[in-house]
Image 1 (cartoon, rainbow, N blue to C red):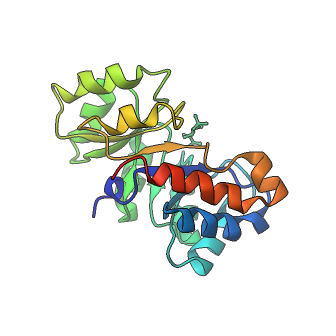
Image 2 (image 1 turned 45 degrees about the horizontal axis):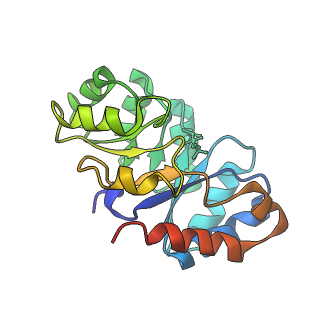
Image 3 (image 1 turned 30 degrees about the vertical axis):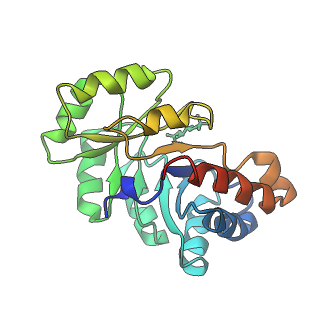
Length: 204
Ligand SMILES: O=C(O)C(=O)C[C@H](O)[C@H](O)COP(=O)(O)O
């Protein structure tokens, strides 16, 4: 099944303490969100991916903030099941294609979408969704480029997620709201599970 169709919401998580990774992933899966993007923004990120991949079999854990071919290699080595980037460069796209796992390259313009579509890539991250034009921009892209589907991320919240999910060229949305830093710091996994359950219910 295409990556965009596995869950309506992809939690984008920033792991500061690696010991939170496994209980956090379990809470997200229990809430109904098995696809988890761990951003490579923090030092423990790769170890977090490694632990989730090893210890939470029902999670589909991937790497976010993938910026370079070296990030692709490190993510694969950690056991990432998919890759997400905030933007694209030719070298990064080559490495993502070569990874042989699903990936969502970041785009924000029609030209970027067309450049990737030319290579047969049909699933992308629309980032930063709200600042880059939001719903109106995605609706406009569906006219000339109806076959390309997106995971909008950046400024998505429970309030605006349903409108994005209703667009025919949106498969899922991503966001950080599922794993608030204070909930992770205090070990409040029940709150994370509740946020995940609410998000999982956003699209049948
Ligand atoms: O780290 C990355 O790879 C990113 O591309 C950035 C994240 O997707 C956004 O930071 C989402 O953040 P929120 O707007 O809080 O949901």
